Length: 256
Image (cartoon, rainbow, N blue to C red; front, side, top):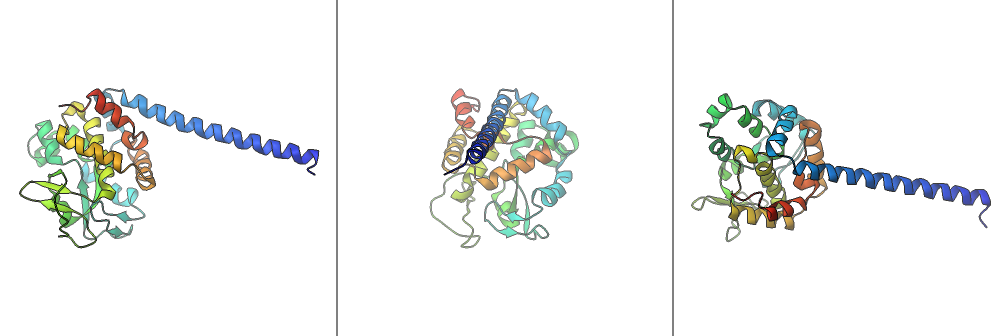
């Protein structure tokens, strides 16, 4: 038989566990509510808030990208090439949302001219949520091509790299395992910098929305998002609250 003191101990342990559970749930609900409130802010207000925390420009962000965000290594976006924190030879930094699209939206000239003349372009180019490690050759061939589904499975970059490029059609197809990550990065940029003219056209948005649903955020993506929050001061809404994308799409938020 359990003694009276033993029963009291069990009850106290249960109460403490229950209190901890509700406290954790309250913290989670608060975080989700904060993200939902952020989604109702105007893009200009979000951009101003991000600018306060964001590094000045892309040249400033590169060391932070490698030495802080990927201090323990990781893997490249398109080919899954693993690298250590001390060596990333053969890799460079990919802008998932192409910067040529941003220069066109801002109408600030060439990329160099935009860097020299546009503070907003520098913020956009340095946004960590849009930056991923990539094999240099794959990044170069991706260029500013839009994403699509390409017939066939040509493994031009090796059997372990599921990435296809259609130079004539100016489209690329990434592996299914990273399509959601790419979609959330693209939607983040169009969401965060909507007032600056960054857009995803309807056909591309439909495909990316499907990718977002088929490949939801995993632990690795959530850890990266949390680390960027610590470094840059903001999160990717579509990682923290994935269902928010559906609401925004239905509301016509991304319509051109």
